[in-house]
Image 1 (cartoon, rainbow, N blue to C red):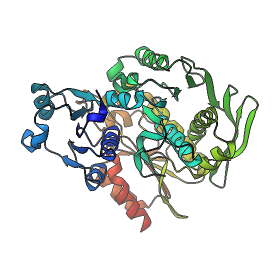
Image 2 (cartoon, rainbow, N blue to C red):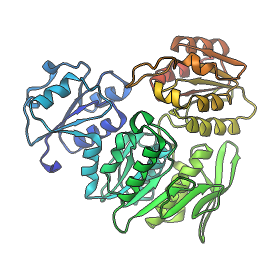
Image 3 (tube, helix red, strand yellow):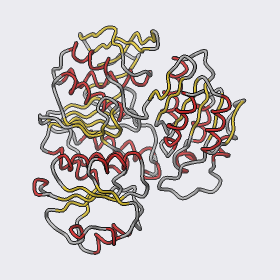
Image 4 (spheres, helix red, strand yellow):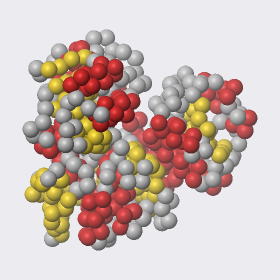
Length: 451
């Protein structure tokens, strides 16, 4: 497929973070861009404001005439997350349209570019966003397709004048196997997406295949301790090819020293908090040094880095109240996040609002979730967000709650969360999850700002 000939793009599942990035990219190229999604969200509303038409009914009658017949100038993109019985998808297939997965299109876009691809079951969004920011802020420049909204640029897609592209490489549905990276980073490979892979062995195998797709003469940068290795191993507080040491918190800011062979960068202040983000920064610094970016420019960029939306995002930060929102939805992500929060605020009572994501993930990691959620002083546990799944018998939030030995815990609805926070005005509250828990962010912000 030659993207230079494309004039129109239709996206099924346009409201997804990856799909919306492609929508913005093709709009930026001057194409007519439209799409469908099940639910109106803040992101789809933003797309509409940018001139992208979005429908929310699975109704073929709402398709513009120009999208009703195949054309070499029309590109159809879908995400595997859409329902298999979607009428719009069936309509296109019946008329012999060629439908491309988001990952296939991303592979085509990046094929002719110097590609930096960041993969991992967690950490990939922050790390790829951090790399892109260093390249932008230093003047090296890049384009980027990110799995979150960059707080520095308020977008999930960045446009550069050079041939370099930073891509978040998604392991879900083996999507990252469409890429041919010049530099590949793997941040983690904890068991996840077992509804797709079946078992951990097949997940690990997919990461190994991803690393095999690095182009000849390319480079792989892999977190130390994973079941596979790369050209460079990185870590925090563990000596290897590139690592962080002397990690400390001073006046609410994380500092660390970076060491790689004879290279040492001392007292780096990180613009976002978290032990896990120090580790992400080690990977990002390693990439930047490989590109020849000056140490002082790297350090300056990390100071100004503001992270990605819903990744350790401060919503309220006053002397009376701290409210942080995070996308964590795997036990190890929760552990990294909550451990860092408690390090920053050791004397404050921690109220955790958590929405489990997927019945299968809750089932597979129930004990892990229970263990890490016991870090909370008070737990407000919401119902499981089903996403693409049907319920699994016996797997409920009540089942998960019963696994926890924590003094203050309860099952709650979204309205309950707002009521409890309004009544108690907690000094330190976090919302965590990958479902629709983000709908609570604005009302909770209003409550705590006026408490």
